[in-house]
Length: 205
Ligand code: DGI
Ligand code: FE
Ligand code: FE
Image 1 (cartoon, protein in one colour):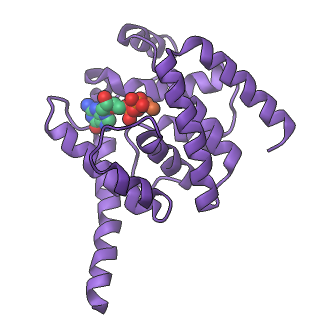
Image 2 (cartoon, helix red, strand yellow):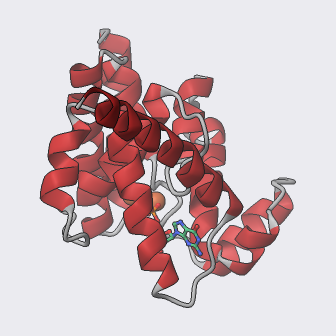
Image 3 (cartoon, rainbow, N blue to C red):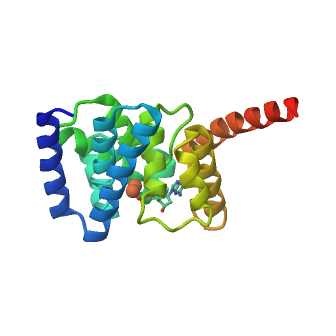
């Protein structure tokens, strides 16, 4: 990583430390360094992974009202699902602030922030890395499958994304929250990869 990128990352880190509640800041640090580790394991750009990981939740401390207002003011279109589920909006708003406030112009980084909550069908490696890091970083404990998911993250990213989405859909099914179309499409996409792998392993045995 060049000195300029490192300096910039320090500045952003400082800014986030000031605006995010301590727990959320710690989580962002966890996602930052877990993204870096995953980038190492999978040959992705380490600096981009760190930057996207660091910034992914930069809009998370805003209230629902502030999120709606930000989107309206800046012509950020919301899907029907986002209108109904404000928890989804911080991803889109985070991508917007990363560009406007933190001066990130790398579209790969912006997109990894944009899709960190729902995922999407056909994610780039960087998107998969930040999506996964958000779920497995050291401070997380919400899934009973975490030990297995954490191990898989470093060997098979597509399978890991499938496991996370499977967990997420189960969680949503047991709540009153509805499933976003982008999340559902992501699940179908990674389930197909998972099923294809399994049918091949049945072929040979
Ligand atoms: O921001 P974090 O807490 O670190 O994690 P996140 O960005 O994955 O956000 C988690 C929230 O997103 C959690 O409240 C569940 C919600 N979520 C993820 N996918 C969907 C969803 N909520 C709905 N309603 N529908 C989804 O498909
Ligand atoms: Fe988030
Ligand atoms: Fe997060």
